[in-house]
Length: 279
Image (cartoon, rainbow, N blue to C red; front, side, top):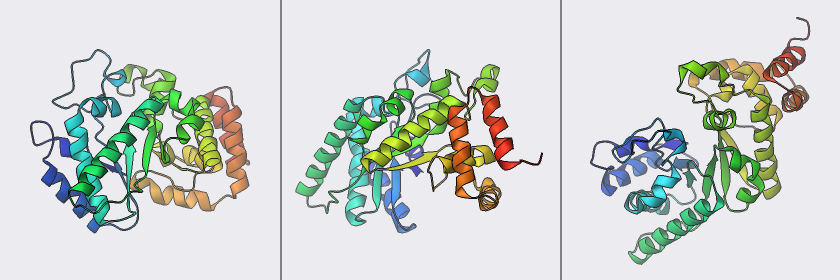
């Protein structure tokens, strides 16, 4: 997944369309296979000149909310992405951040279709099948995942924000840092719901954030059905070696325990029992 916030800096509002064209073109030229491009995600802890002074920025004007209001910014980015998609057919996917209701998905897909039509009329090659997916970052989307899966083309679960909003813990506030528990049973239950909805509707689901960087997180995610994990490079060898040590049934049994636990302590007890039985 490619985050694009860096393109928002260096100008009054965002990089020019020509600069964006060059950026996405080089990105596709220097890579192979599908590329997921996450639309501008500002607000919260990612400030921008357009970001207002808000008392609760994580609950404010951010992500897709801002983009649907800032029509010029959204269309400029979509034009660049979709021009690139026309040159690199079947390789680009668009990912929307901070979605909270189905109407936002419908509106974004409408804007994508409008821009595609404008580009086609201007003589640009068009990929009419560019998938539009959503970040699953708030409990409302996870709870209603089945409905969202009928509108979105794929899911990407943002575990950091999903944890923050589910547990009502500001992840940038050191005073409540101990309450930011991305392995809390409630998080596993929500992730399970999202995976189930994605499977039922035949769409792909991935996970981003740092949850898979630790062994417990990676174990539960594998047990819940994930086969692609996102993590910092320094964790890859450790997690890869860990995965090879156990069979799939062990991971699945642990995931069931994690979803059925009443608190974080029980999750850790199950982890120890399943993976360190002799200790």
